[in-house]
Amino acid sequence: MSRAEHTDTGHTDTGHTDTGHTDTRRADTGRAVQDPGAGAEPLRDAPTAARAAGPVQTGDRGASRALWTLGIFRSELLTTLRRWRTLALLGVLAAVPVLIGIAVWVETGGGGGSVESQGGGGPAFITQITNNGLFLVFAALAATLPVFLPMAVGVVAGDAIAGEASAGTLRYLLVAPAGRTRLLLAKYASVLVFCLIATLVVAASALAVGALLFPLGEVTTISGTTISFGEGLLRAVLVAGVVAASLAGIAAIGLFVSTLAGSGIAAMATTVGLLITVQILDTIPQLDAVHPYLFPHHWMSFSDLMREPLYWDEVQQNLGLQALYVGVFGSAAWARFTTKDVNS
Image 1: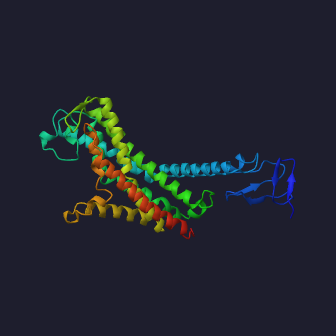
Image 2: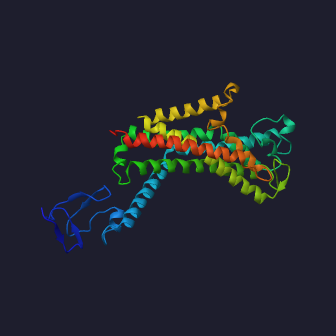
């Protein structure tokens, strides 16, 4: 059929000249677009509407793809944060500093004593909490990083792809013009943002409880020097950022497992199981040769950021190891997902 041009709507339609029915067609991005007829404004997605005024240029197409990718990322992040499971995980993480703070406060008789004088023990930095409530931030991160934070990330990452497949929504997501690669990147980016949010929830809860139960003031570093409270607060933000980055490796592993499994529960359980297994391996002295290559081995290196001057060597080793895991398991997830037959 020949191309027909509608002068009353101001656009060219490559479909039927008959305007009395709905014409379903695909834009160059791959998403179905409906044209209700010559007398009404066509229903278009945002990138198509942005290109309606002229021919498609390379720059316009790149901007459209960027808009699609950003839109998918925003949708994935909001979907993740709105789930009751995610909110429950964040609630548990926020409760951990509260429990630690109350336990220290009770043990020291209302914060007037010293944890060390009562026998010590517990997470790193816990003996300094009674002198400065800011140390509750570091103690809470040290307590949650080995188990609670990575388990929460493992649950979210494991459910990223497998959860959609088990719910039967994955094939509908693939209709989006961004394609499989951009969808996978959006999924992983949303998991990384969750890593940051979860870490900040722990830090913010600890700071609030520490300020409520204990005094605040100048901070004594591990090196024995004293810094101002403002600089100590900046150190706490820096520590939280390093802790969040330390979770990038387990996030990539969880995403890879999620591309293999057809059930969200199975993927989450497998990811958490791998986490526990690697944590156990990291404590076996006979495996000392492989310990530096296990992703949780350098997690506690953030304590070096409480030295004066800052000590970066082990922190850099940690971040480099996480980048290696992201590269390996991210590539494996991409290879699996882009060749996977999606039937649900």
